[in-house]
Amino acid sequence: MKLILMGPPGAGKGTQGEILEKKLGISTISTGLMLRTAIKEQTEVGKAAEKYINEGKLVPDDVMVALVKERLSQPDCEKGFILDGFPRTTAQAEALDAAGVEIDKVLLLEVDDDVIVDRLSSRRECSKCGAPYNIKFKKPAKEGFCDSCGGELICRKDDVPETIQNRLNVYHEQTEPIKEFYLAKGILAVAKGEDALEDTIANVEKALGLGE
Ligand code: AMP
Image (cartoon, rainbow, N blue to C red; front, side):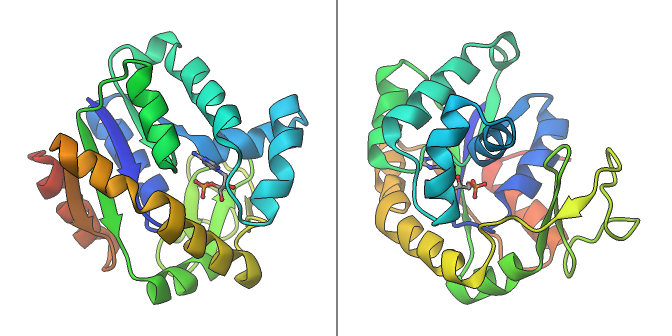
């Protein structure tokens, strides 16, 4: 299965990616996480991306396309993958197409903007493995620490009110139009992502036609 997860920031792409990764036995590729790791390691890509991320803007297409193409060429992607956070522009979607990557399904997680603002302000991320948490809706077993690796949970630098609104605007202006691109290909599946986590998991399974 070659799957794309689409949706506004905080829609739950990371959480659903984590669940689907286990269920389908394929890797999740989160471009946001790749960039945050690159920033931590101060690589060339990290240095180029930092300013954009902190301002809630998109990193230029050429940087992103090169990063994703390289990642998709790795052996674990041969049996399929889940893309979380890519493509984010029509140019990125076209570049994926032009590279001959045949996507099976695009799952769009639908969540209203007011729910997003509330969610992002309580979101946390593991500083070691990047696993997603939320102190209101998806609490770790031990407060402040990751369930899977024990790493410390931190608040992302771009989950602050000024940046959140920017990211939502960018989503509506630059990313949402990609829906049409995949709708025309007949591979768009839509799931409501607004309610409790269990409901969203069920909605996603139904949208992707995955049975228990
Ligand atoms: P995310 O973790 O998916 O919310 O991504 C965090 C930030 O990384 C975004 O707000 C962008 O600045 C940047 N980013 C991640 N993926 C992409 C992409 N495909 N294109 C451009 N920028 C991206």
